[in-house]
Image (cartoon, rainbow, N blue to C red):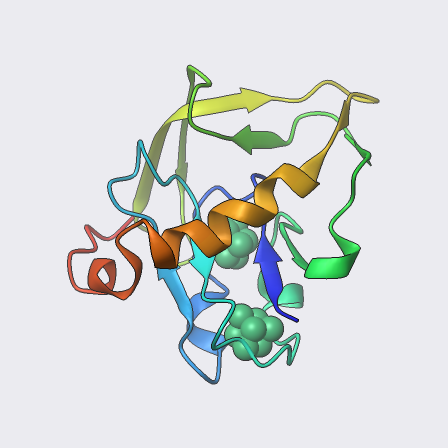
Length: 137
Ligand code: SF4
Ligand code: SF4
């Protein structure tokens, strides 16, 4: 099994540095791959990244919620959405995303659709090659 980063990720990056096997890679280009992605073949399911995420975006694969109920105000970030987000990440660097939507309290979202992109990023996407082309976001 692996851990999965879901579309609740808005690139805070607090998770990346605690991963003991360095299997978390920032998506590039950001408009096509808006999250950080976990390499499922390398993740050892240690769980160290989970409490580091201020947006509770990371789950063990078999616990990704099919019906996530929004608290209200959190962002979903996905290709195809057109909302704008600007914030500051864990390192104090600016994050700008143009593929977001802010959720209403009580809105229900299926996050299991977010499992596949974690796999795809390392098969059909840039995978580890993006580690070096990272723009700081
Ligand atoms: S800490 Fe959470 S929001 Fe930040 S990059 Fe990791 S998964 Fe995404
Ligand atoms: S569960 Fe552990 S190995 Fe897997 S991505 Fe998180 S920190 Fe890395």
